[in-house]
Image 1: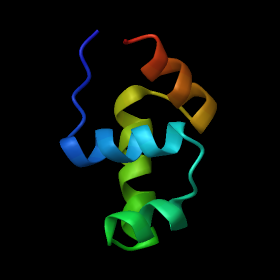
Image 2 (image 1 turned 90 degrees about the vertical axis):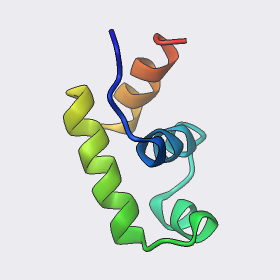
Image 3 (image 1 turned 90 degrees about the horizontal axis):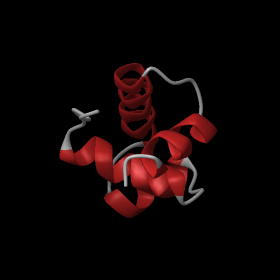
Image 4 (image 1 turned 60 degrees about the vertical axis):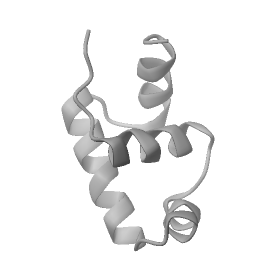
Length: 63
């Protein structure tokens, strides 16, 4: 299975898997929380998932 996530989406997905909140990710990347939330929505849609638990499972199984 090939993921079609942008570089930024992959960066945000990785940070989410570390348990960081959207607010913390936004501060670290110098973007708004709303932008992080938008990226997360796109990530979930592209991967066909609904939450961070599924995100972790999906990314873990790809490595």
